[in-house]
Image (cartoon, rainbow, N blue to C red):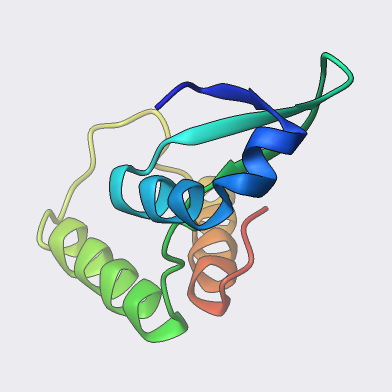
Length: 95
């Protein structure tokens, strides 16, 4: 399927476009009067709060096994920022 098409053709093939985008994950640009107007693409799944919490818990568990970090990022200020970032990630808010 072409990645661009006119609005009239898109209207005629609307359900075919939806099926194609959801099946392949591709995008189709719909043009109106020869100019790009709309993009139709598949919805990407969003992680739930529980999934994000599970991932961050595994991350923390993995890195807490190492008693000494030899990284220059091993400081109180960095740990404070890291803790705040992981907390916001668990809430589903990325900063």
